[in-house]
Amino acid sequence: MIPAPVRNSSHRGHFAGLFLAAVVLAAGSRTPTSLYAQGGARISGSGISKVGRDTRKLTASAQAQPGSTSATGSVRFIHNSPAGLSTFRGSVSCLSVNGATVQISGSIDKGETATGALLDGKAYSFTINTGNPQSFSLPSVGDAGTISACAGGRGEAVPVTEDGFTTR
Image (cartoon, rainbow, N blue to C red; front, side, top):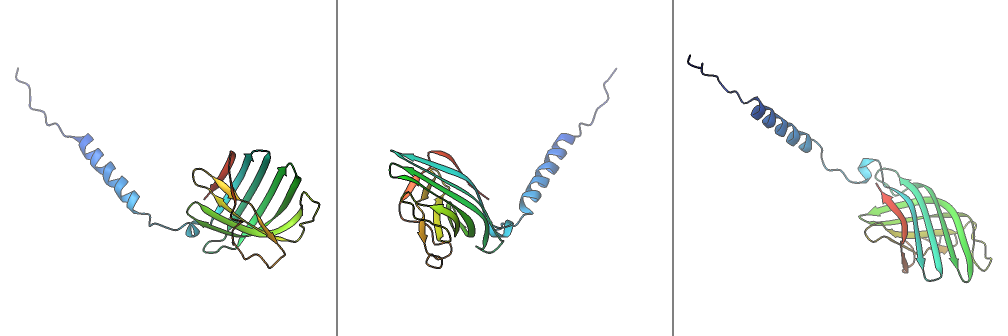
């Protein structure tokens, strides 16, 4: 008996080709969009910095509207040092994200310095580096209207030694 010739159709080859074409088309179907076009900038998380006898903790959760730096959210800052405890909580009114650099600012709802000075109603701003390694600035604090929106914090930055921030 002579075996009949069998045609070997490569269905796997056709499937692989179609699959590859689908992947390429799907990848190319999205146009690049900026962070603001995706629903606005967001930051969330806490950064703890323990350096020497100073412990600082910055907690931020904020979102800006698409195409804008106008934001809503909250912030809390605690600085425990040999001089005492300084702390404040406030609202975020400005959020700017440029790569790994985040600048937030707003007003302090309730706060007090280690020397007992009240911070209620004052303005603040921070700069946060969400890259690797992460860090955050010491806050700029002043009377309302003296700190520009999203101006960023003071020049001194402390490393994040625990936890961290995420942006979207």
